[in-house]
Image (cartoon, rainbow, N blue to C red; front, side, top):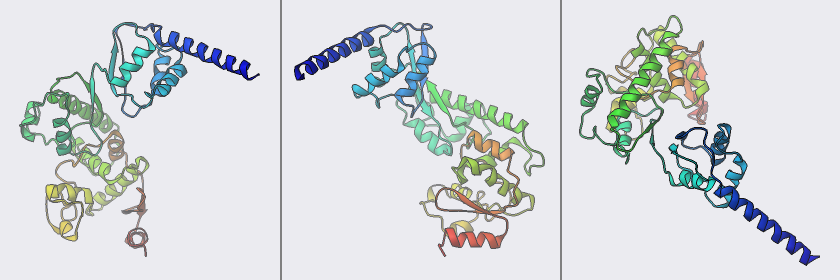
Length: 328
């Protein structure tokens, strides 16, 4: 009996090995040549295999994923733009995906980054040509064709693919154009009776919303609070603008003296919106700025878990501060 089981196991192993060899060495028929596809940052090998199966490239996505796992390559997927210029075997495709043999690299603009952070990331991207490295912010905007525009918040956060050696100015130009397009689109569909009257002001508001919360569901409510404050002439009193105004002087702690120190961005000392955006807002923040949620709230305070407690009166707000900030 044991001998029979050993023989059966050996036959299974040989059959599996023969199948795997055949599968991995059989060229894949491409729907078009060259065939290009993108792999986004954070996506899994299973998801890529499913996407390739949907367009007719992989016939057995489960087998492809299984081989990737068995060979230890399941978590070695590299993001980028890939081009297949002719038939490849599943093994060659797997090697290509895990070596990062891309036709284009990617650069991700992160929601909430300010222009200084964006420049730092661009300067340290190894595959770009760094034409902005020794330029001032104003010189960069002039190169982009917007000589009198402040750069803050003017670049849309997204993933941009580029060929090796491309100028960083080209990436910035694409991101600037996309932000302008997105801003114009949301502005056309804006709600009535907003307390700001230009796209630029909406962009400033969106940048504040972006920095105030990472919770998508809260963004319209945050916008509603700030709209309510502007409509009654109340100071915005938002910490992110103060932090932005402090610049390199901000050490991670916002003190009472910082809230009292007057700068163009201190919304505790100056009424209305700050003079420029303070970061790159994403599409959800842009939508929230022009479609604030109807609310009576004038205050909000962090609960300590990433969400906020909204209050309509100062008394309610003080109670929330005691509960969530002072733990009284």
